[in-house]
Length: 91
Length: 95
Image (cartoon, rainbow over all chains, first blue to last red; front, side):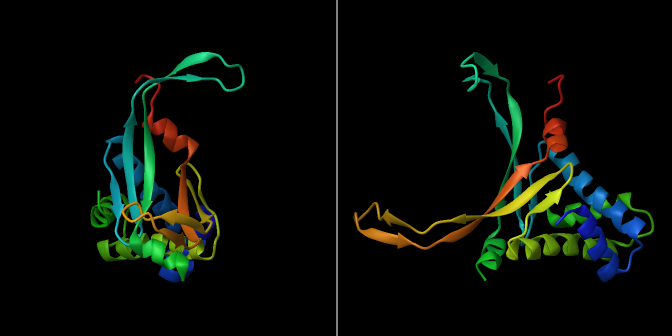
């Protein structure tokens, strides 16, 4: 499933035009992205929680060349599915 | 940010849609993703990330308290992989 499928679903179920559906889907994911950029976690009840985690710099190795290098500090996202979502998968 | 905060922010940014309508759209988006995952489908949101279902095999584990062997049934887990654009947005080069 891609964004195009979501657009189709919103178009059919909610009755927005395809253009409106497309715009709102972009805005939904962009709004979530903005929260992440602020370092905020996003909790969608019934679905799951996204957390922004900070990783410190560490030494690593290029597995291909064996060369040692510093892995720069970075922010990564983790997703934890809600119990409701996990339960839905087992049905 | 919670779901209701997300709905409010999205409603502010979308022209001509009420809070209620926005709520229905947000709800439908996550319900649709959930349904697709339930069907075992992979979800690809360009610029955001991918969700897929990963099967975890049944395994034997031990109760650490009693040392007793227990069977862990097979499980489905969700794997989220952050999209390239989002990863870059979280880590701007000047940082």
